[in-house]
Image (tube, rainbow, N blue to C red; front, side, top):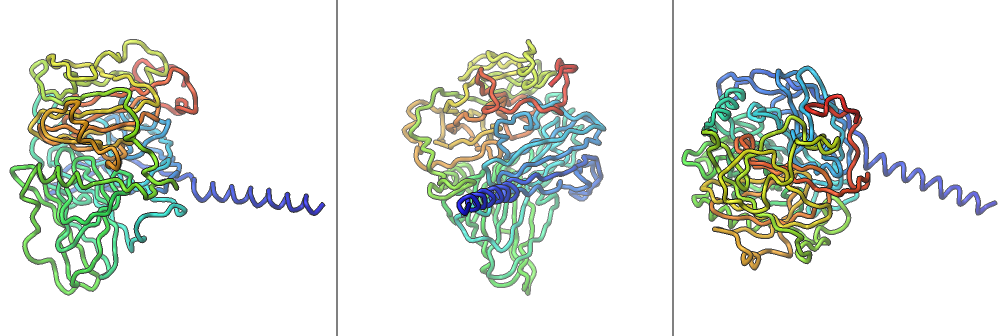
Length: 542
């Protein structure tokens, strides 16, 4: 009898403990966001912007690893609209990715409820509109995934946490900008740089304390350099991975990238400049903020700290100092370095070359000679319902074709569980940045000139920085290459695109179809019951 009671108590304790774990670590968070137009004077001139719940930038989305997010998005604009979650890997769930290859856009005066999980992730990210040129009008905001309390972090808990959304900004209305691109014109030079939607912001802290700064480049087209007057910046996380903690005076942050730094307020009590300025541009645009000591006895003074004089070579050398912290945890208990990417032979190599071309007399951007056009039916829906004619997996080659550029709905086939080598070859004179939804990747190597198989001799096969590609693209310097390894462990249809939004809009993108012929919920979740249907999928049952 005694043993029975003890066993019963043990089972009760275990059950309660399990429920507590579920409630503590995997809660459901519910949000309702309404997207509207509004008027704001961003650069001293009233202009139409996109607001979320009447906020510009939009509300911050702060979640914990493994949280489930249920977000009802109501579109009150006069155009179809989508948000994409720049950093969330959408494990087995490309249905929630929020791009036109996976989702029908939300019609005006309608809504869609996103349902996704921040599964096994940490990091500083952001969300933004993926439709048309809406991103040029706002609709973006911070998305921060905080570590679980049971997972140690490789630094002391900071005394405060600041989010900075930095980026270039244009006074031109997003519809006029879209019309100009459609007519074959390039994107003009931006009108300014913003920090959290303003030209000036203040961040207050106590002398002697250490603060976390989460910085994301949410702009359209321009790399930025970030610095804080008189203070060192300790880099601790890049793209969802903990890194070797080096100290920096300046940080280059390219379009779509996010970094997390620690700053100790160890200077005399006064105010100091926070600076974000355009990089690699003839005309330098600058936004300043203020780091305000709570016991400050003086306003900001002296010249605004300048960015490094050296350009691409300096930036490339800085990028080489970003290394994976092999012994640190990230979102899970096991050390980051427990996956030995460098000991796996890639199953296939893709070489992707970007280009600017004239097609039918208009400017278009292409990958391996193919400029992407969106189909009427999202690729995910066409795949699911076996709708013919929507796309072809023979529309783009795995290496540069050398042929004149054409337009197509380009989809590249791959197999689930392969590890692939992807080389981004940039033969243009401007910097590029590339993004792949749904995945991590290891930046194995980068260098000047043309990539060749001999370039592999320079690869870092031990502690190369891994980025969540879905939230932290990698830059490719002018007339240079970058090689990455990607482990294809996430089935679905995933967007590969330039983060430079004008280039993405005019065709520098395609989709990677990560496929297993056997449908299984172990590999990919089923089509959502609330899926929006459009194109040839209208009238079909989910």
